[in-house]
Amino acid sequence: MIGDRDGKENKLFVIFIILAVIIGGLMLLWGQYNSAQQVFEIGFLNYRVDEQLANDENYIFSEGDAAKYNDMLASANEWKASAGGVEKSCTGETVTAIFGDFAAADISYTVYDQSSDTTVFLLHGYNETADDAAIFAPYWWEKGYNIIIPRLIRPMGEGVALTTFGVYEQYDIYDIIRAEGLEQEKVVLHGRGTGAAAALLIAGNKDYPCGIDLVVSDSVYATLNGLKIEQLQAQFRLGEFLTGSIMTKIVNAQLGFDMSDIEITKAASASEVPKFFVCGGADNFISKNETYAVYTEAAGEKALLTVDEAKNRMAYTESYFGSKEYQSKLDEFVYNNLK
Image 1: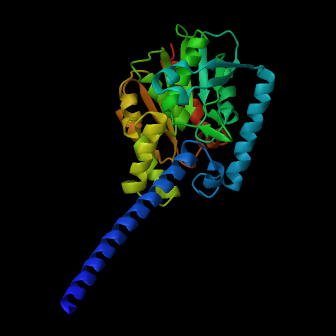
Image 2 (image 1 turned 90 degrees about the vertical axis):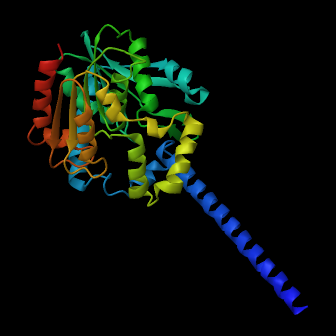
């Protein structure tokens, strides 16, 4: 009798251990899923992204950088007031056709026209606005070119705004080019971060040739998957194994693309479009090594400038208040490659 009782107790103990392992595993997976969903909402849907980035010392401006950057924004606002832009919108037909109804949205943009045969698109970075892109505008306006500044974030309602790190945004650029009838005109794309990725992706996209004549790529990342892993580790202290893998599946299910397929290096190598690369030597948010990797693989005429003292989003501003190297090197590149 005692032996039978001991056997039953052992069986119950084994069953208890198995149930504990199963329940623990399910709880772990549930926790990892919730973490992945939260990262997706912050990263792609920009839900509470300001709060997240406000705690990232590699993203926020120092007091000195903020003062200089605000001066650039003030100059850009003065330029906008004098240039007299026209607000427009067009339907994001291409993205909707490829990725489905979830991506459907009107694309808003402002056109500044001075009757040139060359139009420059200014493309803002992650968690930036068209105002940030406008800091580049006076440079191009003085050359006599038209300027278009799109909003590269899709309003999704209830305080949610979608960004796809260049994937959808590249097709938005294509739709604006078609809407404005620029297929036979010269087109320059000058982008930072997400905007730089979108510029290189559409320039190297053989399915949607739209006659890009020159790209300025400021602080670009090499692959979307690599960026995801880097930000998971840096901002969320999370690993790729579970959280990152689950987030990849969430992106694929909800947005219709696989992050591992989005390689900016491959796009840069697929196009002979002249490319001017810039990065901040002190940028610890998007490392200069990311830009170096894309530059190394890029085809066609290319140049690379590192603004040594510049942190995240500060390459153009540091150069403007300092050596002017960004502007002078770009002058030379434009002169030699924009025929």
